[in-house]
Amino acid sequence: MGHQRLKLGENGRISIPAAYRKELGLEPGDELILRVDEGELRITSAKLALERARRLIARYVPAEDDLAQSLIDDRRAEAARE
Image (cartoon, rainbow, N blue to C red):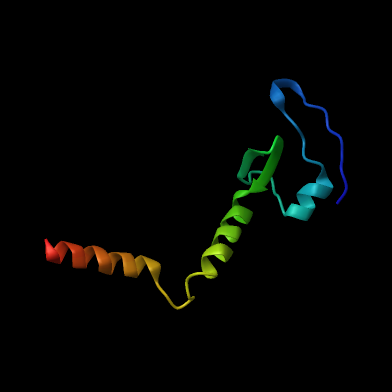
C-alpha cells in the first residue's frame, strides 16, 4: 500500500484511513501498540503483535511442548530440593 499524508489534529490525534484499517483488520475498540523506531512512528494491533510473538516462539519450541506445565514441574522440583 502506498503512502498517505495526514494532518495532526487537536490533542495530537490522527485518523487511520479506512483502506489501512481494512488491510490490517482493525475494528473500533481494538488495542493498538505504538512505538518509535529509527525516527518513525510504528503502529500495530495487539492481535498482530501476539501472533508475531507466537510465530517467533514456535521456531524454538515444539508445538507438543507445554511450557506452562514445564515451568510448574521445574518449580515443584526446586521446592522439593529445598
